[in-house]
Length: 50
Ligand SMILES: [Zn+2]
Image (cartoon, rainbow, N blue to C red; front, top):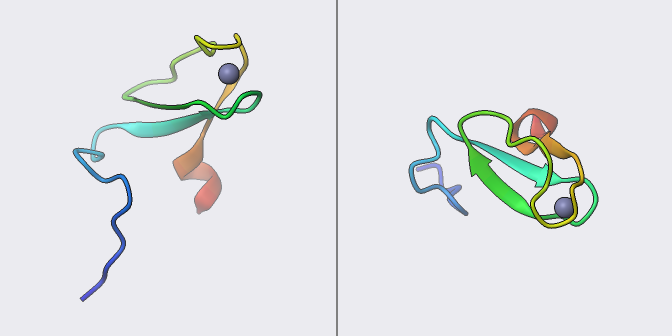
């Protein structure tokens, strides 16, 4: 059986975004825009993994 669960709650409809500047992780259905911590830019993590 495949076994790869780290932060999979209801991560079906939501994508994970990571701030390129401070590394804050945000899950959202659409691009969150600017980081609330540092106003940096978010990158979609799921896309960079494949
Ligand atoms: Zn940030």
